[in-house]
Length: 588
Ligand code: SF4
Image 1: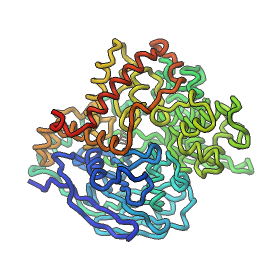
Image 2: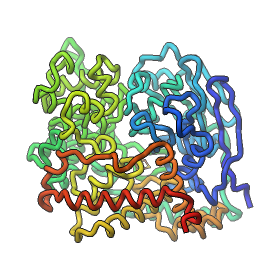
Image 3: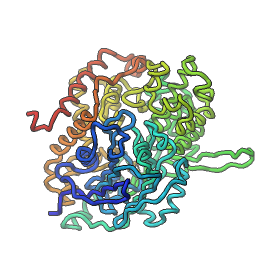
Image 4: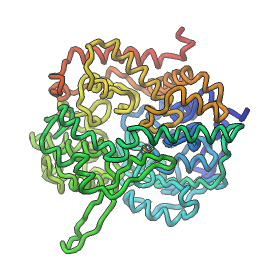
């Protein structure tokens, strides 16, 4: 039986040295989310701030990555500048396969480089190169330069980089992965920035053994999984119009957050529908390495030069969340204009969802006279694309005191300038689902404050009785099933295909029969470990709030029920403390 430990590459940035260690056990920690939490437990400093040089920035793979389709994500684990607690973010691109071909299950950045550097990791190389000349460059320019500086292993090479927002330490700076993918939420870009790492290049320059003792059996199983993936509705849904297909139904269900959630439906939203993007702007689809679905939609942005006679075409990726945040939420109901904001956010290296929601709050606060023109600098008004473009630049560069405050989070700014009631924050800036109490309770409390933590927004869209205990039992179970997938690490779009039975077959095929038998118990333990890390780094769930604006929402199911929302939150808080209390066998 192969060695069940993980091979982890730890890079000490202060000394520009690397070490390879054997860590943990695949049968216990699984990989991805579980492995990242276990590495944080060992190397993290719970009581020190996120910016402490010795806080680790962890990138963790799953044990099925590279062997089966859509096992195509990497989990980043870090202490977040957003709330100074343990956090996770997920991304794909070429990174998972590149890491697999380095032979490392995880890469951990520790320490702080003496000055800006680009770090290069391959199967036989760990090096840092001076990147002083790139400090201040936007994320797209940085990608272009880094591709020339590290030309090898093309196709098996992944480039992570930050924009100005990661340098100015925004609480929602992202890490751009291979241009079209991101470690988006909760500020991992600033964790790279505070370590003086402008770029991380992963060269998959090694070999990868075929798994298991029987290559015939593996080949047969691979073909079956591939066929299942490409034959399902998922394939056509995510490939054809992609997630933007959700704009029209959510608008019809009165669940599309519009103009800082002052509305949840508007006929004008057809200007940013998936159909409009597909018909008018789509140039091509792209895919994470090893994915036959290709859900990444790349649109055409036509940009005029200043002389007004010439223009250039730029390629910008879009999906539902970006359309909600940089379209509907800021009242931009024209697909080209929304794409222009996505492009600016990309350059600054900001999380698109947090940026859109923060600017929507700033717009309302400015219109209500809580912010002055001197502070916001541009005439922020719903639909004013030029003002938003400038404001995004100001956010990325932390231009003045107001933008520095806003870059620390909408609620942080609202506490200082007023307008907490209409700050659309649920643990972090909201995701694009104004579906009802279950989603609001879930995002405000869940582990990543992400719409992907649980299926809460789907739950709201079905008729159900108002039973808080039943809802919370569903949220906890659903999270556990997702933790298994994000530990392996699957794209969550494949969750309908990767049933427990199929996952067990895959694990047995890569010589992990014990994990195949114990998946549920291992997933539960990793779910608990993640919560332990979150609570150990200072999470107090009852301190999270659901601002008043959410209670004013009216969906297809009617007005919000504040008493029911409070009851769901109370039951969920209790469940979180139980999950994070101790190891399961210590609580029994
Ligand atoms: S479905 Fe989309 S996000 Fe998921 S792996 Fe494929 S291309 Fe990447």
